[in-house]
Length: 522
DNA sequence: CATCACGTGA
Figure 1 (tube, rainbow, N blue to C red):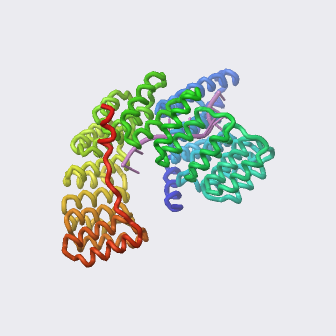
Figure 2 (figure 1 turned 60 degrees about the horizontal axis):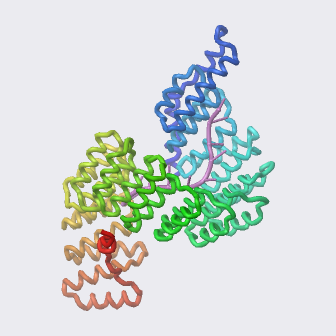
Figure 3 (figure 1 turned 90 degrees about the horizontal axis):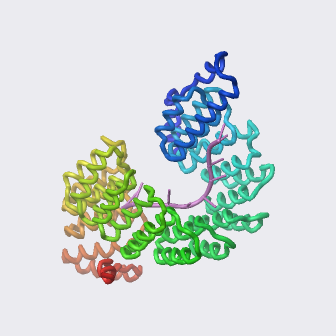
């Protein structure tokens, strides 16, 4: 982990020359330049323009403008940094920070909090310590923005002691510092400490309440989260959306939809965030009718259809079984990103329309959007379900070769499934044996299912052995093994396994179909 | 002049 981070840091260093360095100094020495105030006005309009590009997500334009600006001040660099952060490019943020340092400018509180927020949850979070050291050196540790960002940073690297110390050393604390402390404790799973701090806070606002609730949701304490939600004095779109989405994440789709209905009755207007979560709920419980109703309320609400909400719509229609409407919504999107393409390809894959999935994949490649690891999970599972062995093998091979995406355990699971369904058990076993990562339950499960399909006792036991190593007793192991043994005529072993299942209280789950329950409306 | 809680895919 750490060595990978350092590798990235050194590659970042190699790229710093892409950021202009000397222009600031040369311009300052020209006497016939406009007066300082004129120059400041000039740079201000450039900065405004830069911020405009970044706010509307046109990072390319912003980058171009930044490079062409006659001079760049601290605000220009900070704006550029926030743009790189928004596009989730910690590598770029780091490079930009180095570029800025090379012009001799010194980071201020905006710089530090932006960089800190850019490294959370990435391998660049080793920089939290360095940034903290810098903060102390230039005495920025009394700045509330920096303090909050630092606390979150230490939560990210899992250090509750230093995080508390950062809080204690703040000169004066406001509501957001206290709130940051609560959510940092929540992030590392110290629920009781978070609760205690929340109770002793000098004042609370709607953000603090929402953060506490979100903390419980992140820690899968959905009931506690709901208690907090019910106790809140006032609620806004964000608190409603967070609770609804909490239900969706924990698969309580009916509760999510019910809460959405209450939200509408309470008079709070949903926004695109809310609709995305609600569509996720509809998709999760395969409720086409509800999804259609949500779709019409989106159209009536006048909420602009952003790329995220439209992708949720595509996914909803695909998961609820209406792939044709999913394609309509998809084709109507003026801009598409990886997620949009993944939604439509995944939709086709799920419905066994392997050829159409591959056609869309081809269209995606032609449109210039780079596929990611999710795309390949979808493509490979399309091939597996459609029995397109050669295609699957070809795409699996192209991942690392053409797209620099290292196959992960999910991709291996798809390939084992692909070989397994086709009866090529030997290929599947060889693939597992050559895996660079440990096989997980899904990989072994795919192999075991294949053994059930093709009645191979030998490979089945290999798969069962592998699964046992995970110390994860899964009922499928027993039911599948007992099926194979039964077919092979080893009834004693089959009966023995069934007895074992009874003792361990593992039961085969009944299969269900959503088709019957959702055809009623028509 | 520039941040600030909530969101999509397997």
